[in-house]
Length: 219
Length: 219
Image (cartoon, rainbow over all chains, first blue to last red; front, top):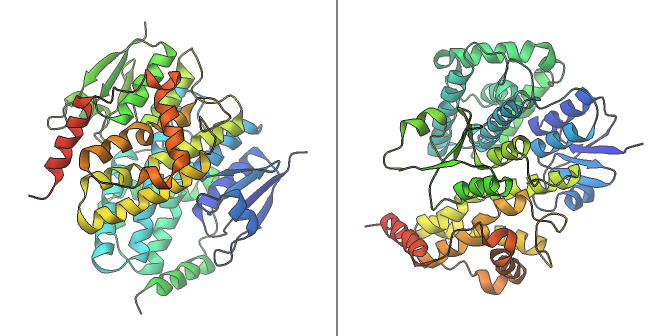
């Protein structure tokens, strides 16, 4: 029987993408929570380039980078497809997944940086939201009205961005200026393909990011 | 008959990746050179998010982002595969292609920035070269001893990085500290799968980047 291990972090959107994919495919796996202050030798050996989670280990072979792992899971295991069948739709899904992944740093920077650098990051997040607001008008999912790969990559903006905002008190003025994005996000969080795979947005989850934002604040 | 157009720039490594893929597959295409100072309405309509080349237009449908285009070409057209057949090898190829693409900004910054920011970019390029030097020891290609996707993404470091260095006079000390990288690069540039698809490293090519570096220098 195939042996599948996932090295992850309970609060990471990138870990959650991989767990989501494994659950959709019905793959049994062992989840190993990492400690960023004391990274395991398994993590350091499995991802020597970035030393980051998530890492999927399948039959002893490590695969790194969440979107690369999703493609691997889709190609390797039976079950519902994560990428669309049509190659043009697959290209659109990969385009939007890359777009969202390229924005990770600015989303995190609005939350962790201060002063002028934070203002710059907020501006960049606003530009990202403008693009998404235009793209998501009257849309429930990114590509061809079907849940797929890009929607899994969208967990960062669908859930975490709002939690970051609440936890840090940083207002990016999401609600007023980006109505299509907000309508999409509200449906996204509550639709069946997504809801059961996102972590609960409970007090513990928000409190964790509040503590992280406070730790990052200048002393 | 399928209609394929490529919007590109003659000096762009990203355009060249796509041309390379089309040639390997034997796809006939119309190449349209863009002017960054006066972008065509076709480019602006085809890539409204980034407004950047390359864009592949296939039967009227635009596909953006060079690595996304390579995956699309591989899935859509007959001919030799661009990605490895084995799914683990495909994951490795995607991992290295992403690694190389994530370094584009720092590679370009060593060439265009000045002063402290340039020093920081040089340091980051050195870190990238350290990783590549370790990975490429005794290797001709990135994955499974066969030319594939990651090697196409490596055109930036295989050819352009050295040209940027010559054109700007910025020494990143490639030669002394990264012998495996240099051995790989020399073989890469001259091997048959690569050589005929790279632009000639002639005086015109270097002079173009020299002029670009001078234009970017503080007045």
